[in-house]
Image (tube, rainbow, N blue to C red; front, side):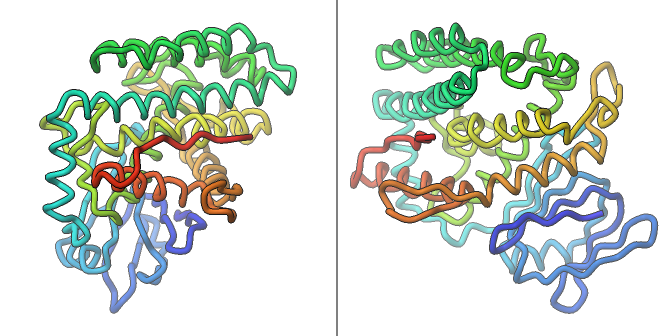
Length: 338
């Protein structure tokens, strides 16, 4: 019914259909089958709603008061929206700095390049990791390095996005060699709907990481509606998409390789639906459990000099961005060292 993440204030995943309500000072969930659970509100940072769940106004007011975000995913596992409580950390000063860096072409391009550089370098590190484990990824690694060398010379966002697309294409072509399971062949990127098991896992994982970064943004002074790589327009949120690019290779993709390599998911965890494939509840549960294990895993942070979790790394990345926008420290993306 429910799965909890492992951070100090937990991420609560709701897979079943049912109702969410406030009861006294707790979150109360009752499934369609009559199962129920009380969740202490002080322990809850965000809700990931993957089932069909009824919510009333009183419950939303309760979540707003307790600063709990609610991320919604539709029947197919696609992210569909977020209940984003009033941003008491948000500041007019930071919004002006964000807008200034977006409206100045050179300033925006710098940040967009940094997000792509971070993604490309972490892709490179993932490929090197598996190359050292005798996976046949040398050609793809060389192509990624060659394409990455062009990032610094790009003159606009469209050129940058084209290079990013080519880097991702080469990277995805290495997936089959990395996991070695013919049942999860990549066969090219496909989205709505994903056409095979690998694409279904990628799409589901990306939706989760976009939501996780959005939750981290909520606890900073940043406005999630102003991004730099992804165009700021009528889309509700874009900054989380920018920052997530850095972390997808080392969090989502490594999670997928573990799930396949350890046979934690199989073809029985998928079903055909609406011309594509849908990840069943069993597969979603396996995914989020392994993802939360990765998010709580710690690494030694060079600048801090102490271990930090991958979830904490996302928050630290946002703090670095704040300092850049305020003119204190030039922003450089996190790159893993393993």
